Length: 525
Ligand code: NAP
Image (cartoon, rainbow, N blue to C red; front, side, top):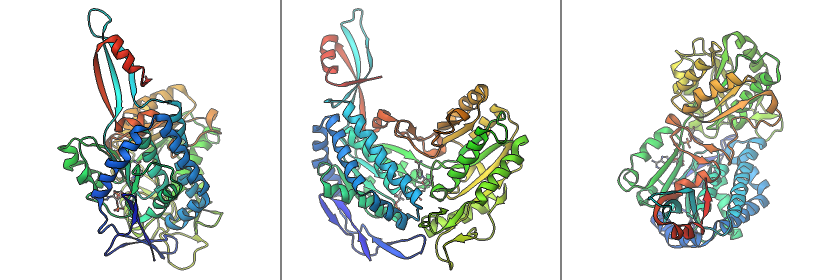
């Protein structure tokens, strides 16, 4: 069986000893092995510090942007190969694979353009400066300079391509070398993207290394100028947060974790209207795309009690038409979940939700349902499950437990925007919440009411129905992350994403001297 290799200190290295097997989730056939035993993580860190860091920091933002564009071009030339690999390794439909791979390419291209727009500069000047003394000559500025450290990126299994590149593009633009560690179960796609770039020579040596397999001791090497960006479960996040690299040595950490994303149907939205149809379409896409394994997927669907029968009927009809099964078939929209462990977790999670809600679509037996193009009992399949709770405020399990599969729950509310926002808050912090409404008071009330609990709000209305990308798509222009349960982190958002890798330093002194210094940077804000 093919062994996945790590790229460390300029070499592709295979681990020794007992390896983890990676399976095709559609057939359960073993496809790769990965081991990190004997892989020298300390050498990776030393290489990033010794080679990657000086090489990147010598480049201007524009030159780093050009390197990112070269990376995007090299990956684009292998797009079909990457899509095929994602389908086999992740159980993705072709549409799901595009969501991941094209998301990676789009994010890289966005940061490439952003870098080029910053010109021949290497640091930022934050804000407009301020007078500090009696006369204007005593002046203060804030600089944002790249730290002299490295970035470790630990990613979740669900987006092996986008997850790697949405983090790496930002760090590399900041001038920070990256050691990336994809989740082992779906690492093949991530590793392949690094292979492509190493072959193409798109990035300076030492700028990007990849660890294929478990790497729990990587954090031990982090010091005060370094940063860890983590995406994954709250449990792993809690372990990492407690590491002395962060609590004693002052390394930075950014966490993207679980989220019980919400969608709210406004009381003004009539059945059959364009906004109602948008709401139904986006709930269904979010439940089924990537077999529901999206951190941004809608899990809780709040509907005014007076509209519940109509919303339920529309969702039942749309979900019943969706085919689950062999992801290589064009008509199939829901492939398997990624691993046997995920299958177990989703089954257990649906049982938990059933304590507070009743299935109205699927949710019976082993959740496999009727499959298209699959004979026999192989594959980690879950057909979509829609549940409904009678009392939203009392449905504790629905607000507390993220079921990472094609699963969502309908919850009634009175139609009052303040109540909707309060109910969303029971999820203790999320990545994204949607309000579907054409009424400015409803949109304003719900958006402001739930903003403290969410990193992003998606406003779905008739006027943007045609252009809407839905809440599930994470855009490089807007911040990604959320408070509380979602980890409290922030990524992307254009230049905002670079903050993790920059030091904000106040400088006070004689204005003409400071102005000369600031003139060498790129002023923001
Ligand atoms: P996970 O089990 O927490 O694993 C995430 C990553 O952490 C993997 O690369 C894993 O490596 C690594 N890891 C596990 N234990 C570690 C340790 N002690 N030290 C260092 N690294 C460790 O999460 P998952 O099952 O892959 O992902 C599902 C979860 O991610 C869901 O809860 C989902 O909501 C969340 N998620 C959030 C976002 C977001 O942007 N907020 C995006 C996607 C997913 P191995 O694979 O080698 O064990």
